[in-house]
Image (tube, rainbow, N blue to C red; front, side, top):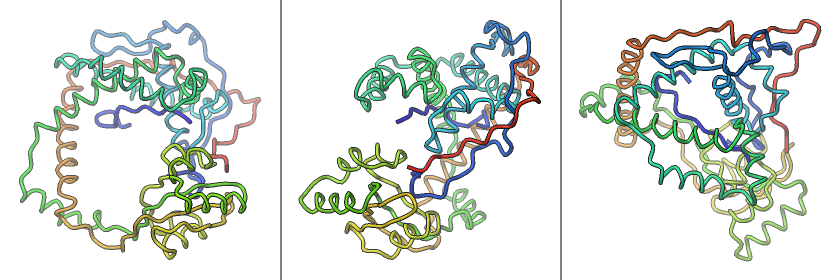
Amino acid sequence: MTLALGMGTLAVGGAALAQTTPAQPAPATPAAPTTPAAPAADPSTPVATVGSETLTLGQFDEYFRQLVGRTVNAQGVPLTDDVLPSFNQYRPQILTQFARQQAVLQLARTAGFKPDQAQLDKDLAEAKSGFTDDTEFQDALKSSGFGSLDTFSASLSDGAVYSAYLDSLKGKFKFGDAVVASFYQTNKAAFTHAAQSCAKHILVPTQAEAQDIVKKLSGGAAFADLAKAQSKDPGSAAQGGDLGCLNAGETVAAFDKAAFTGPVATPQIVQTEFGWHVLVVNSRTAAGVTPLTEVAPKIRDQLAGDAAQKYVNSQIAKIKIATMPEVVTVKADPASAAPAAPTPAAP
């Protein structure tokens, strides 16, 4: 299990693995293995200024590691040191993103937003509750890009302040029914959805194990409990096997056929190249256009988010931001071969 923490992409720019066709990671072309360029060894080296605040190389490296962790964790892959060099070519751009994020946090704190310590304690306890012991939790922190518990706690705190500030801005913008309806008509193609199957599954290596799980389900065992205990799909096991709603054609052929033509609410056994799946389809919906009444809240939220984005950009423009990309840039080692891009491992 991994921990991924994000603070949203507003103003910053930013499925389960086993049954889907693996997606490629963000970098289109991995960089060659790299060696740090002097004088980047000192973590106290300034890399940017945001208003009166100086950001250091140590702070940037923490942010960089966490961002790479989120990227690879999204594919079901834990972060390891050998993955980091593949993202080094993006360090200057990530520095710009880091500086903008800190500018938003400055705006939030100036506006009086502070973390709720009681809620942070609750969030931390909840994060720990999914692990059997502290060692397992510490391993999860490392595989998600967090160097220590303090770093993770600080990220929780910043995330709470960041989200509260942005939510407060979105709440200031209201849009009437006519505006929402106009947006819906203008962007109707965006609300056209493919056929969907909402499902859950348990992935095991053998047919015998799958048959045993079906027998246990018939005997009254809880699907979620069996998924957490036995599923080999790292992307869905922790969620009790829940895959959410899948679009037609989104998964490998055998799984797709069972999800869209098999029985509903009845366990079925499906074999794919990943192993044997005990699949239960919770519901299915046909392709079509989602009604305005159903998407109106999402449209209002999007319009408010766009308006808040413009406001935040205007406020960031008033803050003096200077970055030093040459400090965070690492030079490629031409003597080494380029590593393969990180890809999800089959269970």
